[in-house]
Image (cartoon, one colour):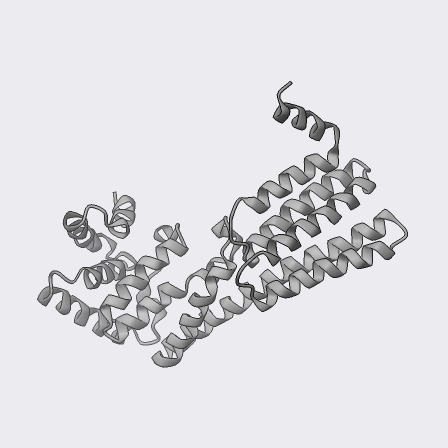
Length: 289
């Protein structure tokens, strides 16, 4: 009999082995285990545990949690660069194992591990909440004309964002992923068009459905007439510098998120004609059909 088939049959007969097969597969799916991936893996672990609990297999549930805590902890320890929250997660999982050994019942052991898993999820949620607050602060500063402060807040949010992006982008609150979108507005106001175009491109990578949102960038500015002035200067710059691709992309991006969305189409078309591999232009043109 084929060895792989034999192992599969054994896993089917052993609920602990079957659950751990799914959990280890989830851990191995991405080489980097940041807070977001850790929270996604915890979700898989808790789902497997809940299923066993529904089958009244608390002994097996406790065994799965113990093995899963060890596997997740080892995976986190293997990361070459660990953040403070990640180190706390590792210590929490190790502490859960020690606490579980002292518990007299399987229910108690399950509770110890579940607490540690929830703390891993909480670490992720706290980080996302802080990034969301940084984006909100940056937007408030932008509206007040405090561009230096806004840029600092939003840059920090974007620099920390990779730690909170998992395999599924939707695991991370969309508002926390909007830092580059607001940064693009700051670069527009500062006439730093190359940086603005680059930030605009990053925004659609972080929020793939951004183009489906009904956002008017002018409304983000406390004084709409100032925004109009920034946009006119950008338009003039593009007219005088037709080969400035990032400035053209930034202008098209601004027009796309305005009541005059159709005016962005020829700008994106020109970008696509100049570079058939321009993914940003292709992204918006697909939505302008």
